[in-house]
Length: 234
Image 1 (cartoon, one colour):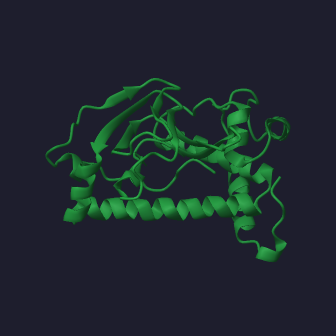
Image 2 (cartoon, helix red, strand yellow; image 1 turned 30 degrees about the vertical axis):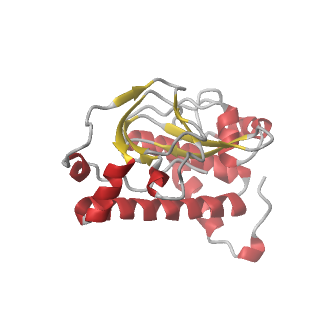
Image 3 (spheres, one colour; image 1 turned 120 degrees about the vertical axis):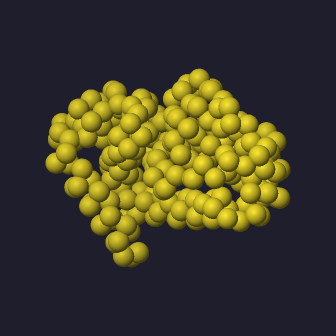
């Protein structure tokens, strides 16, 4: 799992339609936006901030399945007739400003086609493509490669949106890449020693320029590795 980097949803055409409350909602850091099991009756468009999506197993173990920032939608599965309730929980990782869009309003907009319908379908296809890339990344990349890519994409996303990189705990990073906190601690210290990052404890860090291309090229090479050369994720 990595921060969402697919193109943002074009909200302008949708906001021009009637029936949408354009007044944004504000959520404090760590505030729950919706929970697993809640009625799935709306979509949230993120204007500012970062939202994390989580699921919890029957054993109580939490997994982070997405980090979404400004320009992205949360809860879009509500337009499906077989999704009457939320299957995941959305929590503000930073202070968030978002617009709430009623399910029926979105369905009407999609059925009407035009710019809004095309933009929504295009957005969903890109999100689906990224989910597939994330799965490949988990299956074929080492824990070190996955962590390096997540840290890099976090800094790039923040710079693109002109925002600060959210401060993440090592446990959160571990949940994102599918490993243990102890393993993340070792890797962060290794990154700092090799000059990849400037601070182990504070992930509102800067990734040194000479290491950026190396991190990305190594990750891309991993993605292109033949299936029989795949190694067990660490």
